[in-house]
Image 1 (tube, one colour):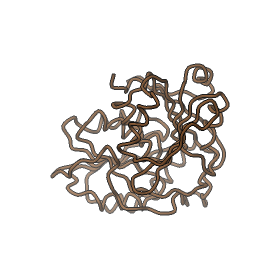
Image 2 (cartoon, helix red, strand yellow; image 1 turned 180 degrees about the vertical axis):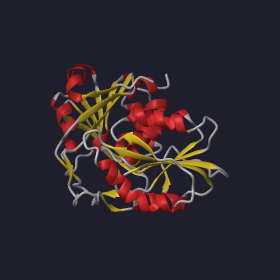
Image 3 (cartoon, rainbow, N blue to C red; image 1 turned 90 degrees about the horizontal axis):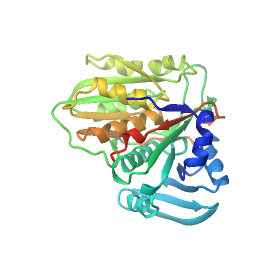
Image 4 (cartoon, rainbow, N blue to C red; image 1 turned 45 degrees about the vertical axis):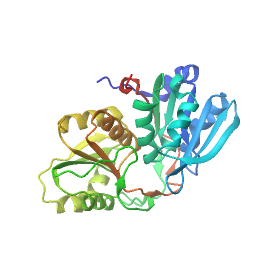
Length: 304
């Protein structure tokens, strides 16, 4: 597997010239959530903005040549795939802005774009912030205001099995791992992945510290894996290395958005995989500034 990950500055001109549609989230207080929308809208590119709504809905706003063409609230599972087809996504080169989309939309859209409404080419973008707003000292993070019930991600629901492998990508907030472990039964093998940003290696210790109580309370034999927090390709490769083709797998992405996308990519290649999520409510202003911007060329994963 070729790791096609680039700095935005190195590939920006190519994207400006060749990309035809941006799929992004509705902007919020986080500076990162506006970056690609402002860039692509200024260049009169097609932009589809999305935000999950209540009762399984999704708000969308479609912008063409800097003008709003459509907006509505539609059903996520049924109507959003129809909208992608109506907008002729399968005839376009698409850029998916992960920094502005929530984890559930990232995973749902990844499946749609990989195997249902397949674009000509697919790129994704992730922006790492300079800092997190609610950091206190070295280990204090409060990135979410509320943790909800654990449930399956739309498009990745599967039945419980007698023997399951649970793989969880860990984030800063250890309490979330505890909720996952209490919700998944018949776990025959547990594989935790600890993420760390390449530019901030000490954050690896933050994740370990905040999850250590939960990890130590498990009576299972497991080895902790580590993975760069911004690498989709490394995360997919690690899943392939740790999971056999015939294993029944439950994935729990609790960390970065690139790792959530990696879980969706892996699940599209392994139909027996279920993805669960704790549907956290993220703080509206959780990060400060813009540090590195990574672009991922994902066309090799398209089911063409």
